[in-house]
Length: 511
Image (cartoon, rainbow, N blue to C red; front, side):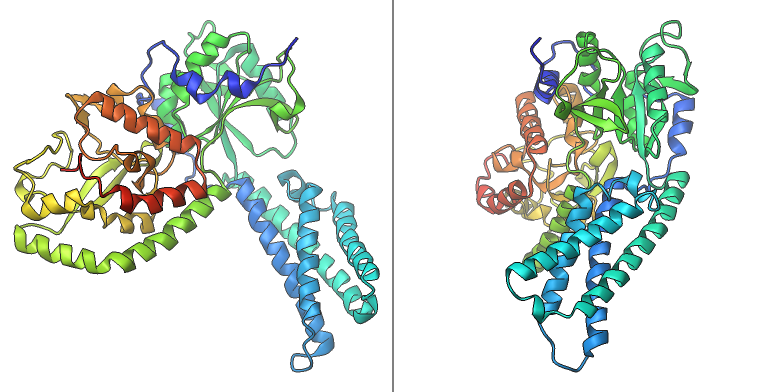
């Protein structure tokens, strides 16, 4: 039998093109039980990947600084400084972290069991010194280094690293117990298959998955209200809102691959959420190549969708936003000051206009703009689209809207974190096209909110900015936004950011 590529089989494009109509990802109401369960979870959780990533940096720093400390202990602070020692110490510290990573010493299971991994840690640290000695021998420079110094560093460095891991194991266990470090999962689909899956996941030692409940459209006769001790909290439509409120990290679909039509129907509703979506493969007779699976312990899963811009990507993007937002504020501060004065002289009212818009995960955020309308005729809900020669727009407002100067205060939104510099443009909560909300016009519209919205975006530099006066325009803007989400990279963000001033010269649709 030919093996099927699960990623191609359930691609985002395939799900979006499914003909059967759905709610397009529009949040449904939750029942009281689901709302109570969702509200109990902490919002300040840490990702296990982030924890292990930070530990890599901390261990490199500990090894490097301990090596320098040993060097200065033997040589003294004010004596001759041999540059090759710090360079060698830094290289050895980096090599040790790489080897620890390769040998899975940064997996959460290993971090929770430092005593069981004592031998592996010692072997990696000894291997680092063996490679250093081999390199020095081959380069004929071994006589230039102090054996006593490096022997002392070997002992001090290992004691510090092992001690650090003992402390980390206690912290990780406490964080896991308190719900501070966990991956929250929901089982989609009930019955015997869900029960077998839950039992398999629970048997995995030291796993960081917290099952929050079960959601299934089927009646209690076909899908019991309690499975393996976990309640059925509602239907798939209710799951949309539950996942957002409870900050769910993963949806595990407990359905066989043979139920392809039902799986696709579920994915068509669920793909709009900023979560990892996995298809349980623990009971499927059809076997794929090992690299096609991800695992919770030893339980195999097929990866259907991954949460976009997650973990270290999100850290890099946040750093990008802070740096370039500060640059933008400094560079455009004269323009913003002049604009504020012009607005005050042109009409009565505040300089800034604050508008409620949809942000990441469909949350409501407040976006700053320079006021471009008369204060008594402004439309915070954006129910009435601004059109050409709109009488509500002031003289200054007409100019700053044409040139997008009215958007400059959003550098502060980006700096504070409610917006990103690059991403899908946030729309007002009640924005409409022909008396229909945008999510009623575009199927899967809320998938735009899988990432943080941006000051500029891929749709804007491709001409889809300004007035959204036709259904086709909002559909095209959404398509470009989804393309950005599915193809994001730091280089893509840089490209969009630097193309934005050039493309803004086209003011055809900006009123």
